[in-house]
Each structure stands twice: as C-alpha cells, then as structure tokens.
Image 1 (tube, rainbow, N blue to C red):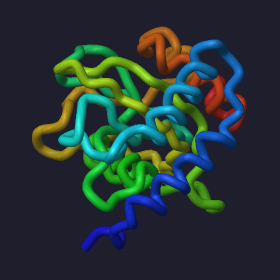
Image 2 (cartoon, rainbow, N blue to C red):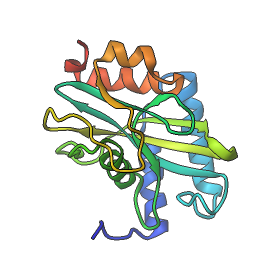
Image 3 (spheres, rainbow, N blue to C red):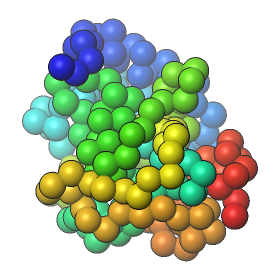
Length: 188
C-alpha cells in the first residue's frame, strides 16, 4: 500500500511554496522557477500527464558513499537522474522516491529532515510534453549496485561527481553542482 493520496488543492499549495522558496541562481533556474509557478496557477491538474502536455514530474539526485547514480533514459538515450511522472494522489517528492527505487533498485530515502527540493528544471520531453521537473535529494544508505526493476533502463550506475558532470544532460549539470555543494563527499 502506497502513501495516502493528497488532495490536489493542498498539493498545489505545498508545491508552490517549495518552488517559491527555491533559490534560483542561473538564468535557466530562474526561468524554470518562473515557468513552474505560472503553470501551477494555470493548469487544471498540474500533476497529471493525461490532463495536458505540460505537467509536474518528480525526480531525484541519488547520493551515497559511491557518489551519485545516473541512468540512460530509455527513449532519449542520454544520462539523467532517476525520476518520472506523478501518479494520481501522489506528491512530486513521493514520485521521485518511488521512481528512484524502481529505476535503480536501490533502497532510497529522503534525508532525515524530509524531502529536500534541490533543483527545478523545465524541459521538453518525449511526445511533445513539457516537464516541470522538481528534483529532490535522495539518499542511498548502503553501497549496493543498482538493480533496476524489469522494464526499466538496464544502464544504471554510480558516478563520482566529475564523471557525472562529463556525461550528464545539460539541464542536469546545475543540479549536480548544487548537490555536490551540499554533499562534499561527491567531489572525488
């Protein structure tokens, strides 16, 4: 049994507050923050991919003693962080954790203080969709190798920060640098 369903109106308020509180630094982050806030106010159901081509997604920067985990996106063929669409009644931080567990097979968790939004990125996705991606810090408490669920990308692995920055999608680089500032052990 999954987490309890969140009423949509309360979820929009909580997500809006988190995005407003997000301290954007670069032009891309500033625009992503602005666009996400506008869309949250205008979309009938910002968390549903069925409601329209623009929707909120949840993803995670997986960190542990071995570095960070990236995977090759099955449709786009690029190295990205685990994440995906928000299920009905689910919060984006819950989607990030669920998708992270499914796509990596690792026992992930939010930091002890609760979900930590570390990056916001708006980008085009497959089939003409636009993702308002909310990216959370996810911790992996052990040194296990990724073992994704059936049907997920099999190309998943741990990276040190420098190696991750070399292969990461352009929209991911700022977020990886933010995470590295929060988790200095990744700089190896």
